[in-house]
Image 1: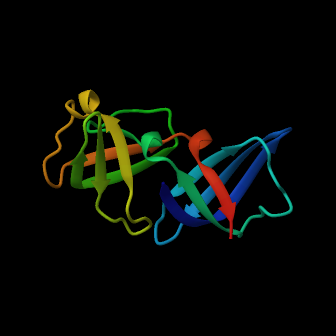
Image 2: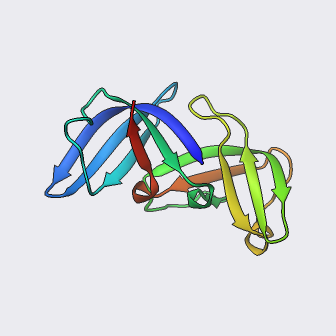
Image 3: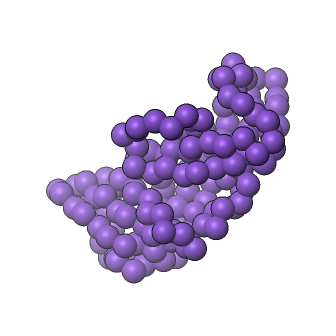
Length: 134
């Protein structure tokens, strides 16, 4: 499970849908989280939070490209662990996160340059992130 820490910087609501912006610790980056069941008693602007998303929810690309996903991270490959069917790619620690990783099928991993220090863009859908108030 990938984990990021931050602080809620804004909350937009429309009926049962909430879009929460979180400023990451030690970074100018904002992560946006889409929620259906919003608990206004716990989640307020300024609240400290942890964000969680699974390794298979970190989408990777190696080309500069326009994308409709809000949450984009600049990543650098640290190491690769290859299994029978899946490949887990670990990325170097960032100022705002450590131990980020992605899981791909072996066939998909063949499309990428997996050499040491290879650069990636990582994308996470706002709806794939779980938020926990600290």
